[in-house]
Length: 167
Image (cartoon, rainbow, N blue to C red; front, side, top):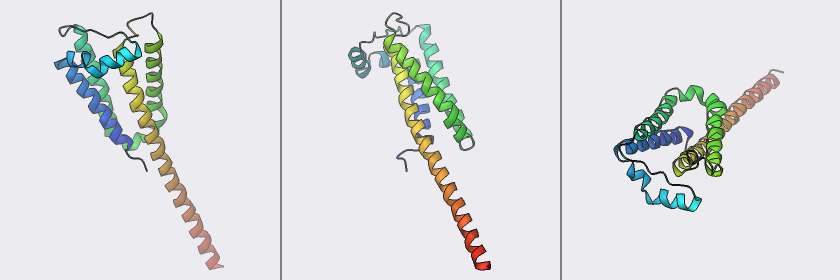
């Protein structure tokens, strides 16, 4: 049994992205001058992004992060029905794309548009959340398969016992 369910982790990811979008909209300098992000950027040798609070990119970034959080919230509405497909398709696709974004942002030192602390941080957060969701979903679907298998084995065993009693 897992410590957290995939449903809970997806809710946390949605809340994180919505919180970051509100923080971007209200005060982008709270993110850009965050001590953890600055230390992380220096340790990873990534260029730091400096954004003016009146820049157009702040609104675009805020809307982008809000839409990602909103997509997670909307996927939770029918989550029970789509859990297996969510596991096979969506999480694996997001995990792969996050890995590619993180890889490119760290190793593409020529293009500063990709090689900076914001792109790397987004890829890292996405990668971390999707690894956790992928493992939780894998364990949850495995538990469902084990329960189904046991139920089927019990049914077959009960039918064999009933057949032996009739003979």
